[in-house]
Length: 499
Ligand code: NAP
Image (cartoon, rainbow, N blue to C red):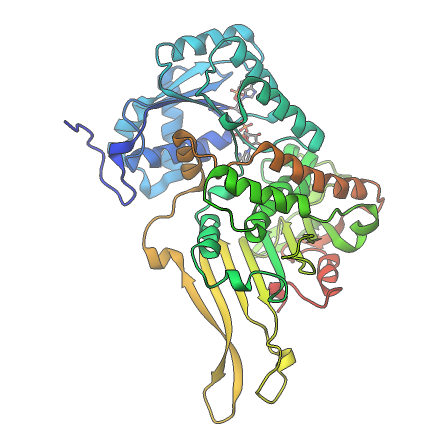
């Protein structure tokens, strides 16, 4: 008899909800409270979490199970807003418990072992939502306490190192404990509904593939812009910068999905093999190329929308002499037959005018216009895929403007996916947690992918470190330093928002 009283929802799939033990290292931290626990709540509300699953928060603070559940409830109420329901919490809250473990204290792991004992046949996941400096200790102690078995899964939150060497070390440490197929490296961008849609757009439609190469596509722009500054992450951010924080993972993953060859199937390794080929085909940018193919900036005081903000160097926790970049623009080139000569312009930054993630694919001009006039200056067809804040796909075409004269004007065919499907899109962590529980690795990064991405990033970082000039200033609320517009203007193009 089904005794589950959870409300039915559009995503409901109650019958197949598997049981699991999820051990959440860093269970009291910002990521756990703001994203992971609300995502697990939503999965539960949608009927995708079995009523005998367990979520075990782990950190150094002394908390009882009840106190931990109370903290989680406060966080879920705050972050889920109107989606929080007391009746759902009444079912979800009891799945939570807490074990106090200092990652570096061997004896503490015995308490965790005791909590997990007797459930060896249930899928066991360890989500390491702590700083990466603790990954090695946690892996070593989990192995020593014999808590990890052949079906256990380890989920690793970014950052996975700060260069190829440190990423390699993390991968070696985790790889010494479990097989590669048990490691789920997170880039939460891959869990976004729109990134999935990118795959659907490219490989679910016959329409685009014949156009998806040099000769048809002129250039591609990938922009991930934030209005926020460093907020409470100054310590982490000042050591990291935009190149390592955003480009090495999110932007390169988007580039891979846009540029990869069609995989034979949607299976994890089929997709990851193709992404890896793109990363390995990226043309290196070293000392000689960095000044023309990259631009970096650091924000100064300015106005973002109606808010006046301080400069990066005045932010609390930032070294006032910091040379850390808060903005990056890069011209990436992929040395393959498909993409030779097609630049991929990547751009990301903080304190920019909009909170937007957008891919713009610009097609070639028609080879010859039958209409008199200025066809060479007519805007070409353009496909804009907006990932956030709203999910939207827009195809810009030229159409005749009404009237006697044959005058062409650009018009947009726009598809707003939220409005079209009228269903709540899954949050990235909801999908990623669900996939990890189900054992689906497609949306997680493989070791060789992470290291190939660092191998492309490291020489750029090294070139910048050797250059005394440092990041160029830009006013908060602008689209970055002048060097960013100059970078793309050298090829005769402009950023999408400048047009
Ligand atoms: P945080 O708020 O500082 O939380 C860190 C967590 O680790 C806390 O639960 C802390 O609890 C625990 N912890 C620290 N030292 C420990 C130790 N020795 N033994 C056991 N537990 C320990 O950090 P966060 O923002 O949640 O981020 C966690 C990780 O995710 C970081 O690597 C971060 O870069 C990454 N990340 C975060 C975000 C985000 O939005 N927050 C986004 C992407 C990636 P106690 O102090 O009680 O031990």
